[in-house]
Amino acid sequence: MDRAWWKEAVVYQIYPRSFMDSNGDGIGDLKGITQRLDYLKDLGISVIWLSPIYRSPNKDNGYDISDYHAIMEEFGTMDDFDEMLQAAHERGLKIVLDLVVNHTSSEHRWFLESRKSKDNPYRNYYIWKDPVDGHEPTNWGAFFGGSAWEYTEETGQYYLHQFVPEQPDLNWDNPAVRDAVFSMMDWWCQKGIDGFRMDVISLISKPEVYEDAPLGEGERYAFCGDITANGPHVHEYLQEMNQKVLSHYDLLTVGEASGVTIEEAKKYAGFDTQELNMVFQFEHMDVDSDENGKWTLKSLDLPLLKKIMSKWQTELEGKAWNSLFWDNHDQPRIVSRWGNDSEEYRSISAKMLATCLHMMEGTPYVYQGEELGMTNPVFHDISECDDIEEINLYRNLVTETGARTKEDVMAIISRKGRDTARTPMQWDDSANAGFTSGKPWLAVNPNYTQINAASEIRDPDSVYQYYKKLIALRKEHDIIVYGSYELLAPEDENLFIYTRTLEKQKLLSLCNFSGEKQILPEGVAALASENQGVLIGNYDTPDAEYLGPYETVVYWLQR
View 1: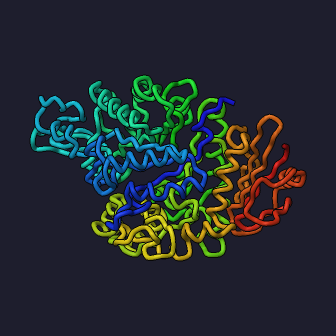
View 2: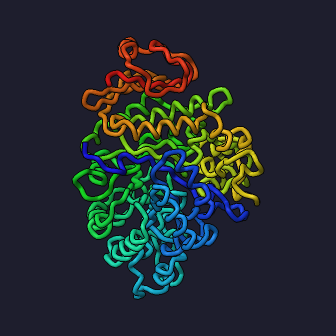
View 3: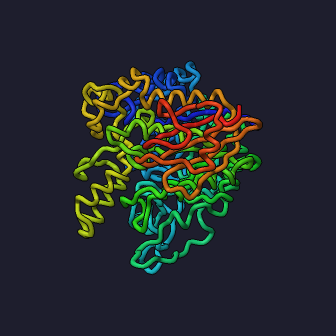
């Protein structure tokens, strides 16, 4: 085993705006996080990843940064950050920051200078192009809809923005940009942070030639993410980042790499490539998508999920490291998505989904509230939503075109929208779930009176207590971290079954993704019947021949 602390860690993602409000303004903040560190210490996690806390106009919830060296005023001050960092370290908890350097805010001083004139010293910090035939330089489309180019009157040129117009893309081909980014990263490392989650890092290197891309039927723009991902110099730039910054510290580094292939992942996170520790890939998040992308009510295709998850498990083994996640700030709540959030099955299915993920090889990520089995809220009107992606979708499909009904689109947003994961953390059954004494920036899920941290901490059979046990087991048993993986019964439409093996030890992990009793396949039942004990499970008395609705059990086969 090539041991590393970040392989053995469990990471907890905090979306600061929704975690804990200390001053009653309805917005979570750094002092609120500090107040809740003992809760996270008790849960057993070892690393906290903070979504962006930097100064920002909040056109995209903090992913549009106007000053990398300052804290968003709504979140507090740099003194508050220093206090939180020290308090976390005193509890043995590490802090990982979100690094957003594919783009800045249009209010960043670099861009304010860059747009002034073509000969400004900061002009080449961003990507500027002349119009072509009086129109955009290319037919590239932004992630949130519309063109990826924005025209400015000052110089008669367009700048590239892969997200909203207020998020201009940095020009990583300019050495001055890279030096400025690396200097900023080093400044945070010297403050004592423990790593970076790198936002859309696979998009930083743009194509050598800017030209139109093929369009599908009825398309006006070609999706820029398919054009810019894994560009020609991305690995060169990350190796330079590693050499100049990352290698000087003992950090956890994870790159968000949408559209990454197995072969590319081996470059980003290979044990011998000197780039990053691991990547976030999203292939498994598309198994309930269709021709409408994620904006669909399509149900889970479990055989496809197993195929994808198993591919990443086996093909990276010994070569690179996996990150393991179901939830994050961009994904709906997993218990509502692939489990069952009814009163009868919410807790059971949340435990099953947790077991399925945490028993695999890789570093697990727990998103705030996931450890409680928090569920998607139901949005009835677009006025209840905050996310720019949802608002643009509604405007396009309902307001402007009438292509879909309001009810249809709100049902899809309630199932797949990003705001489903951003409702405030449910701490207790007091007003606003104990999140704030004021009016929360986004409405609290009404089920907080039944689902909250205070009640689950008291309940020995809660989702919280189950997560606590899962996290503790990872610390106790090397096989969970370092064991090899093998999928069994790949075509079964209801059961996710796999083994983990390390030297003479072997585990059998059984997960029922259905609400019906499932008889185990004959070969699996034979293995289960010879078990040498139960490691963990969500039923009191598991049976080696079948699984109950949403049951999970992990058997020792060899000890």
